[in-house]
Image (cartoon, rainbow, N blue to C red):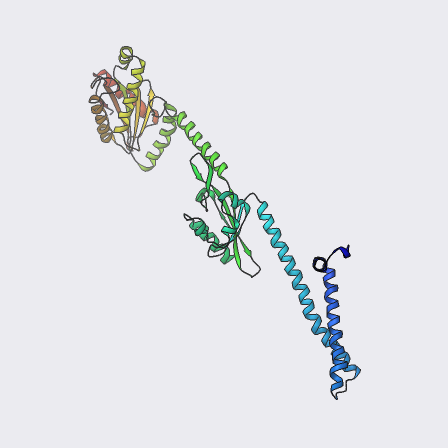
Length: 398
């Protein structure tokens, strides 16, 4: 086989084998050291000393031989250790690169200036930016719209104090603006869970190792579930025809609100509203028109009420308006506005004045407290009085 190799190939094979096996390295270096030492001693003994008149005893020759051996062996040993460390470091670097490329997360190394030192294959696939393009560049050069104060802070703390950092997706959403190939719901950029860890290179410099986990799918699912839960809660608490709250929500809201009114000594008023002669509207124009009248009536109530007030469809054509921080005078003013607005508005397909309403008003006052049931019953009694006295009017409680 050796005969089939030319001198250059044989030398390359020999070097490859030599530096692949540590024992061969030691043997080769040892041969070189002792050969050099033998040649130097021979040169000194047979060439240099005969030209001088110096007489050297065997003891001195032994000392010279030992010193020369130490002088030659020391750098040889250093060479062996250095070579071994260099090979180990190169192997570790290669293994690290291979490892980061097999991970299903993004891994990049940056310094304090945000200059990229490592960019794995996952990031290449997700960003379309190759490792050759990324390494040596600043993050701000790779992403024109890069703006992540939290990442900058995490990198600074990581490098300065060698303290690992975790960047929450819930608070920060993402650190690198990576567009999604297929947007999910209302998400156009990858949602990321990010950690930053300190890593020291061969020159003793501390870099920030940033790992990026794509959590877009779980965020999209959580967001969809949250919207679905909110929708289901809204449907369970609201009347589907008018959009007003239902009686279930009324009782779950009113009791805590009354406790808060007691705690802060704040007034709370209740309006009980009923559309006059609603059965006649249904019988005359049909239930579709009746439903349109209910929706239009609820819209008027929402317009005249404040943002903090609550509108409830109590049953049929009957509604309850709960007015927070409102005493009897404020409640009367709001009820009067509603009454006037209904009188002067064409609701649904009906003409102006075809729809009228009656309103009963009751109030919870710190000096005259009552229960939630009593508050509603008093408003209902006042509504009965308004109906009994001719409808289309407001009746106040005592």
